[in-house]
Image (cartoon, rainbow, N blue to C red; front, side, top):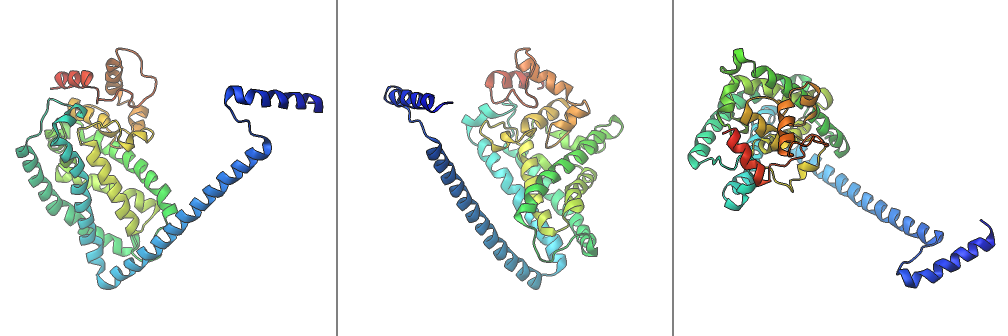
Amino acid sequence: MTVAASNVTQSILEELKPQMGLRYWGIAELSSATHHMFVLSGQMLVRVQGFCSSFHIFATQKWEEMLINHSPFMIASVFTFAIHEVAYFLAYVPWLVLDLIPQMRKFKLQPTKVNTSSTHWSCFKAIVYNHVCVQFPMMIVFHAIATTGVFTMETPLPSFRSLLWQVPVFYVIEDFYFYWIHRFLHWKRIYKYVHKVHHEYKAPFGLAAEYAHPVETMFLGIGSVLGPFLFARHLLTLWIWLVFRIFETVEDHSGYDIPWNPTNLIPFWGGAVHHDFHHKTFEGPYSSVFTFWDWVFGTDKSFRLNQQKLNRGEPIQFYPVCIRASDPDYSSELSKKFR
């Protein structure tokens, strides 16, 4: 562009500014704004890194105090069990609160199925028995294995950066393992002996997430430590992963599809919509966390056909979950069909 043409263009823009109500930035102004944005981003990143470093130092100090004051047995078994119990029942509290609010029933996946207080109490007793008599002994065995060098309790502690990629990887590994164990437990020859216990609740609720036969509990417990065993081997990493895993499985069994649930933003996240369908139909999908294993192995056809039906017969363009069960029109239809 010639100098004359450039001057003409600039004069035209200057004339248009008042009429269009726009401010045209020059290259210098744009560069200054971009630089300012990068400076602010850099300052924020430095503050986050500083906080993470300070917290890591604090956590290391507390961890070393724990190692001094408590035995490896206490840490690996009793503390692991305590973390599991606190996380499990705490994860259920939000869904229990929703059960107590009639206005939230429109978000239930099976709105006509109401779990009574006696149902909750019966499930609670069974869960406590399972945790104390099955899972706690498993954690004692875990201590015996962990102290052989399979897992470590020593410092340094895992970094935040490592946890950012490890936890998602653990989810993928555990979900693949869960898919095949779960699918095997639905084999007709053995279903009634083991997995049928878990399916006593056709309209599941969060507390029933670990309501299962002891054999199923033991087999699925292996999958929970598989990811940390392959990629981490530190007890703290296992504890953090355990909390994430518990919150996920309780949500899957919550019986609610809340539109503003943050997990709806996670790609391929199955959530309660995916797993509740399995409890209603006793068919696939079999995955616990994501939807892609069922798609890969062809065990989600009934779920996808149902999604298409709920979409007024139109093909689903974006899988996995496009039709949210929070719409009362078709959530009622579903509950009538699979009642």
